[in-house]
Amino acid sequence: MDMLIQVQDLSKIYNPGENEVRALDHVSLEIDRGEFVAIIGHSGSGKSTLMNMLGCLDVPTSGQYYLNGQDVSVLTDNELSDIRNREIGFIFQGFNLIANLTAIENVELPLIYRGIGKRQRHELAVEALNLVGLSHRMDHKPSQMSGGQQQRVAIARAVAAKPPVILADEPTGNLDSKSSADILKMLKELHRTGRTVILITHDNDIAAQVKRVIRIKDGYVEADYFNKSEECVENEKAE
Image 1 (cartoon, helix red, strand yellow):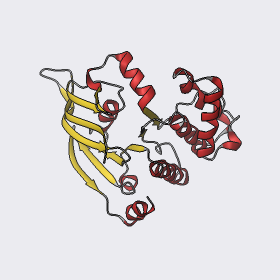
Image 2: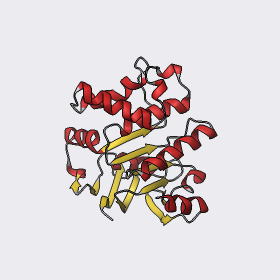
Image 3: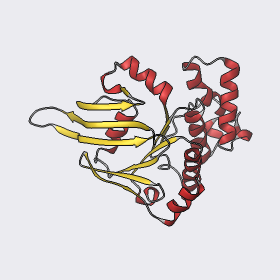
C-alpha cells in the first residue's frame, strides 16, 4: 500500500527540565493511504497530543512527521495552516458549527478559505450534504437540528473539499447510542470510498469496530494491532 503518514521517534515535552511532562515519548508509526485506524487511550495517555501532531495543530519537540512525503514537523505556522486546509478534514466532538449560519453555509465556509469560487463551493457543499443524508436540512441552522444531524453537517464540512485524511476526534462523544452508531457507520462508508480515516477515541467498543487499533499509554505506543472481530471481518469483505 501507499504510505500516507510516517511518524519517526516523535516526542512532545512540556515544561522541559526537572518538572517536564512527556506527552509523547519516542512514538513511531506508519499509516497507509486508505486505512481506517482508531487511536485509543485513556485521558492523559497522549492520544490527544498525537492527534494534534497528526492534524498539524502542533509541532513536536523532536522527531519527524511525514505527511504525503513532506516533513511537516519543520514547517512554519502559516505553512502548517496551509497543510491543514489542503490535506486534512477535521471532525470534532463539539461539532464546532457557527450558530448563525445554515448547514450549507457552514460547509461552504472552509471552501472560501481555500479560494474556491462561489459556484464550485456551492456544488461541493451540496454534494457533501447529500452524502451525509442532509439534503432536506441544508437551510437549517444548528439550533434547528439534533446532535446527530449537527455532527453530520460537521462530517460534510470535513469531506467537502475531498482531503486525503479525515481526522475524527471523539466524534460520537456528545451523541446518544443510536446517533453514535449512525456516525460510525458513516465514517466506515467514507473509508470504503477510499478516504484515510483516523478516529481518536477512549471507547473500547468503538475501537473494536475499526480494522486497525493503535493504543497509546503514558505517551508511547503500547500496542498496534488489527481487529479480528466478526464485524471487522465483514467490513473487510465489503471493501
